[in-house]
Length: 566
Picture 1 (cartoon, rainbow, N blue to C red):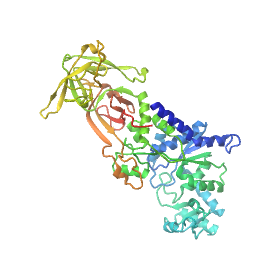
Picture 2 (cartoon, rainbow, N blue to C red):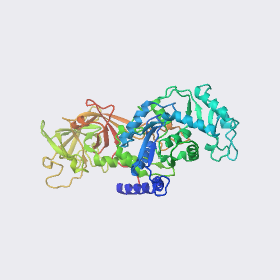
Picture 3 (cartoon, rainbow, N blue to C red):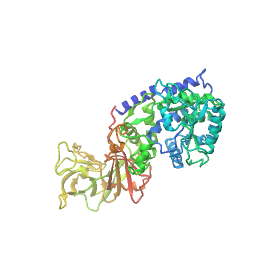
Picture 4 (cartoon, one colour):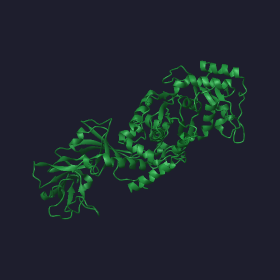
């Protein structure tokens, strides 16, 4: 089924990638970029950490450049300093490199262009294409008009010299916030409200993380972005679908300022939406600041640093983004498919090991006291080159509490008194003979006998084994570990719906912490970000933040069972 899923998803991705079709058209003989290098850019705003939604844009921007032998810039869109910080700048670079992309020496800040943005705004004023407006935000909204009703702007015929003087004084800090804006003079009756004399500059008295207090006027994204694209020589400005209605303004800006470069082509695609999560940076920040999660890198978060800490691999995420395809129509992708991509990757690469999460002691009563031996188990049956390892075995072992029942239930094929023979993984066949209970009636020890002639798990006489194969850890050598079992942060599949309070959709069981777990002694040498398959349990990674050789902490990356349905 996995192969069927992969084939279907890849076919959809190939058929949906209209962006590559447009680029091929543009660079073909006679195309507008014939003979030019394909040049894209990824322009995140440094006001939070990158999340899985950004990965789609990352893969499209950097991946399209790679596909056509082009280049991709990284530009921090730091034109709105309210929530921006160097912490996010550093984290964004780290995440992009972790995914396997690189921008070379083409790293820029939107704020590096502030002076050029300002001069191009002055140019528009001189051309009669921009003016200083004194409508308050409330008045601006009231005068925006409606469908079939033009907007009203009493300042659009202001003399050019007066607007030039006022704009300079805005830059000098002579006016309070909200008292004046610079607006483009386009079309107050346009059916596209983005073209109804949009604001190009606003006054903000706020400290900028790089520019300090040098500026008190800041360009709007719709003005700064096309200028920056053109200045950097971008051929294809790839952005999410909400900017489709802004494209006429994008084109208007680059067509009316004297940038000595070609005109970039903006192409829009549907952004990534997933169930059981939220993508809004504002909401993610609220989860962090109000301590609903432990931080931006909490393994339940959809941030790249959170996914990395949970054990997601760059290959699994890039594979996910490739296989969901590029579409024009918004859709919701199952979070289970992201898990499927991780499970598929780890199944091929993760070392197998034995870990007992809810231990109960198993004593093999006919195994000699004080004797021990080693048995051989494979490191990864999917990869013969991974080899095998030796695991110690003795009279006293740890097994899962769920692998024993005093009274069996129908179809239960594990340990119970006088039940079927079961295999101990890589070791011997055992038969349960009983258990020991404490004063409260709780099982504290499971008793069994073993067949000495069944080393390796196969009986010498070839008899059929009806019981299950059970994983175990030698009690004499096992080490303790803490294991964190993660589930979806939200129990509601659509926590981001407009009619819901997303905080009320949080899953109270999204994290379960197990202490006193038992793992193989080799796990003490594990180094993050190594991933392991705990046999019969799932895929786990060493926690990169809280784990130490003295206190091992493992995060469950994904369960063994695949819930994704074709």
